[in-house]
Length: 241
Ligand code: NAP
Image 1 (tube, rainbow, N blue to C red):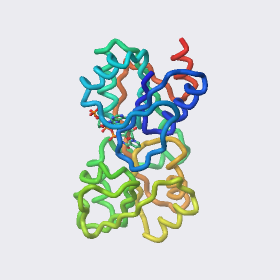
Image 2 (cartoon, rainbow, N blue to C red):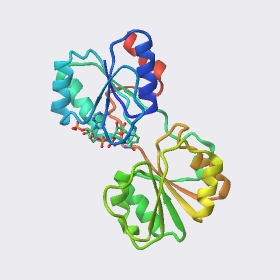
Image 3 (cartoon, rainbow, N blue to C red):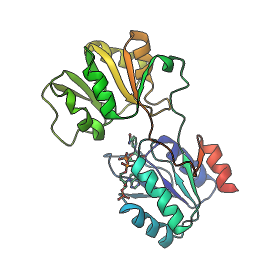
C-alpha cells in the first residue's frame, strides 16, 4: 500500500497499518527539513507527475493507494486520481474535516482563492497575519506596501517586501502564545486556509477571543468520484474490505 503523506492523519494511518503487519510505503514531498517520519517504509521526493506515480504503482506492485496529503495539496491529489486510474489501483482520499462546523465560523469571511483574500485584506485597515503557507505568499504581493506579519514553518524561498515581518514557528500552537503574537503585532485580520484539525486551530480561538477578523480560503474541490474518508478508521475499513 502506498500512502501519500505529509500530514498527521497519514502518519496515524501508517502506524496502525504497520502495527497490524501490513506492508506500507509512505511518500513525502521533501519540502520540510527534518520531517516527522511515519512508521514503516518511507520514500521522499516527487514522482515526476502522474506518469511517474503510475510507474511507481506498477513497478512496486502497489495494491491500494491512499491520498492522505493536506487538503490544499491539489496537484498531488489530481496526480493520484490520474495514476490510480492508469495503473488500475484502488484509490481512497483521507482528509480531516474543515473548520466550517466551528461555532465561530459563521462570523468568518470565506473566499475561494488567496488572491481574493489579498484583495479583501487590501481594502481593510489594520495589520494582517498571513498563515497560509510560504508557497502562497506570492499571491499576497498586492499587500507589498503594507505592514504584514507572515508566519511560516520554513523560511520563504524568495525575498519578501521590506514592510513584511516573518515569524517562524512549526507548532504546536497554543492559545496563550497565539494571543501574545496577535497582541505583540497588533493583528487585526487573520488569513488562513481551511486546513481543519486541531494542530493549527489555536489561532482561530485567539481571533475569536480578541475580536480579530478572520478570512478563510476555501479548500480546492475534491474529485467527486474518489472514495473519501475523514478519519483513519474509515480508510482502514476500506483497506480491509
Ligand atoms: P502539491 O502542490 O499538490 O504538489 C506539488 C508536487 O509536489 C506534486 O506534483 C508532487 O511532485 C510533489 N508532492 C506533493 N506531495 C507529495 C508527496 N506526499 N509525496 C511525493 N511527492 C509529493 O503539494 P503541496 O501543497 O506543495 O504539499 C506538499 C506536501 O506537503 C504534501 O505531502 C502535503 O501533504 C504536505 N503539506 C501541505 C500543506 C499545504 O498547505 N499545501 C500543509 C501541510 C502539509 P511530482 O509531480 O513530481 O510527483
